[in-house]
Every structure is written in C-alpha cells, then in structure tokens.
Image (cartoon, rainbow, N blue to C red; front, side, top):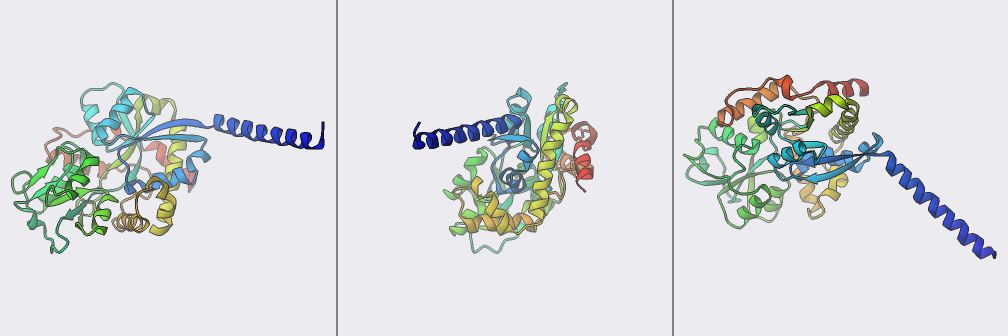
Length: 334
C-alpha cells in the first residue's frame, strides 16, 4: 500500500472508532420520555438541566415532548406513552378521586406559584382590579389550575367570575394569545414569554402577576405512576437530582445568563424579551428552591379547587405527593 493509502486507512479506523464510541456512550444512557404541559420560560430550570447536561450526568437521555395541557399530559402518562409527566397536580387529584388503582404521584416540584401574568389591551390604562367589571378576560381551560387561580384572584378583589366579568375559557392554551392579539377580549391571563412579546409590540401592558396575588401553591410537578415510583426509585432520584441542579443553577445566575442557556428552546423569541420574561419570574420567586413538595402549598391548591367548585373533598397530601425521593436527593447533595 502507498503512504497515502495507509493515511486514508488510519483516518477511517479513527472515524469508525469515534462513531463506535459515541454509539456505545449513547447505549449507556437510559431514555426517559418526558412530557411537559406547555413550552414556557416558566420552566427555565428544566431547560437549564437539559441544556447543561445535568440529565446526561445522571445517565439519562431525555426524550422531551409538549402535551399542551395537563389533561393531555396525564393521559399520556396513564397510557404508558411517557415515563414522566410534568403538569399541575390537579390532574393527579382528579384521577385519584375517580378510583384509579395505580394512580399517578408527584415526586419533584419545579414551580412555586402560578406562572400567569395579567395583561390589559390598553397600554395607557391605570390598572385597578375593579377595571375588569363589565369587561372580557381571555382565560384558560375550566378545571385547570391557571383558570382556577384567575377566579381565586378575582374573588379576592370582590369580583364574581362570569357575573361581574366575562371569561372566555373555550380556547386552546396555544391559541389564546393569538386570539387576544387579534382583538378578542379586554384582558388576558397567560404565561411568559407570550405577554412580554405583545408588550414589546405595543399592543398591551402587563399589570399584575397572578402568582404574586395567589401566593405559594403546588403548581407544576413531575409525576409518575405509583407502582413505577415504588419499583424504580433510583431512576426517579437520578431524574430529580438533575432537576435540583437546574433549580440551583437558575437561583445562582442572572436573567441574562439563564436566557443564554435556555434560548435554544425559544428560537423565535427576541433575546431582550426572553431576558425580561425570566426576570419577571425571578422577581415573583416563581421557582421552588428545591424539588421537595410542601404540604401547606398542596392544601392551598385544593382550597383553590374547592372555591372554584372543581373539588368536593380534599385528598391527603401523602396519597399524591412522594417527598422521600426529593428529600433524599437534597440530603445527599448538601
């Protein structure tokens, strides 16, 4: 063989070795199918954990999908088409009260309060809650926590939902913002970064945070089927460890730094809008400092559900929230 042939052969061997090594590494990772309820800056610690390789450090490859609704995410989890469902615990409560034998259980919490902000169409409005009387709000799905928290906040200010103010609840989550910007309604309650985008275009003004108004609540939680949590606790501990690292990283960094990391998950969002959205969530302490679910906040969620008429009896915290996995992770990392 000529010298050139030997060089080509050597390069080919190196390339094959690299490819085989990459394949072997990929095979060592355990795939976890994760369904998130919606795509939002509200879930920045999760995207940080994904982007900075915290899950891969735990030997996990995350197959991420977006359900666009807690009801859809819970259905995917029950059917076995995903391994972990990330959504509000109201879905777990509904399923438990229907008598499911192998119900779903939350094992790690990410958000500490409602992530919805409240926007007026009029950028010049001097907002007070009484202003909504006789007007129309673009709300969310009946039975979902965003809608129930909206109703809770309105009642807190002496406003009767559906009597003193009209609330549109028939729109899909992903369609609500476009409908509002096209002229539907006087106000809207919605997650970021959608409202900051509208504000940047001069077509509305954010005037309140529903999360700040309603206080701490068990809002968005990672769930798995009860039997699998009991069967594979170490798998979910590894998952929780990655989430906790994401929470810690976000707590220790600026909105600008967080935006740089999570931007691949929001490719169409202007950088300044992304930074502003993250800063809004930082200002209201939107994220829990650790992944351990808290009983008082879970009971507050059920109080909101009772007030909305979506719940007849409360469910014991221990039935639907597993704190052992997250607490063990915290203890090991401190």
